[in-house]
Image (cartoon, rainbow, N blue to C red; front, side, top):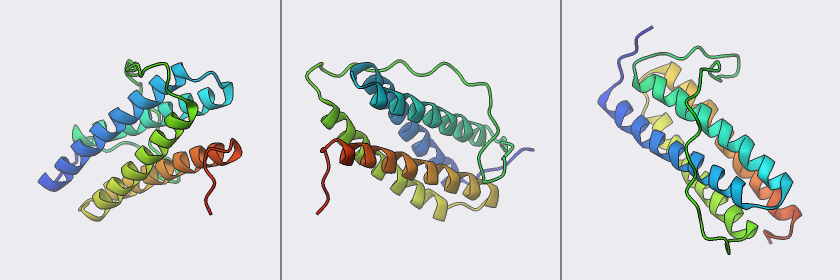
Length: 155
């Protein structure tokens, strides 16, 4: 099924695509840098989710309506290889990486909120709501890791 996007939807989706690209790069880079196997696995898992988000948004931008599974998740599509990670100086700590990713997830979730309100197509809105929910789960996962490891103590 071909979907005609509004100019606003196209602009918002292009922004979201660039945000997903940044998330893919950060998670990949940080997964390579951390020495903590639990954190590495979390980063790799989130990088894979971000790649799925990237693929879904790319399909919408191509005018394709992704086949959605129950709950709004798109059916797996063949993925291009994950983006090569950018190296961050070796003196960066797990604390810095987690704070950076938590801040990134907060920002990305917020941008999805705006995009959702600006969608004219219900199928697109549903897909973006699902992606936003996953972004919020990523933030919660990072928050929980940070709290368990003494990096974040909300008072």
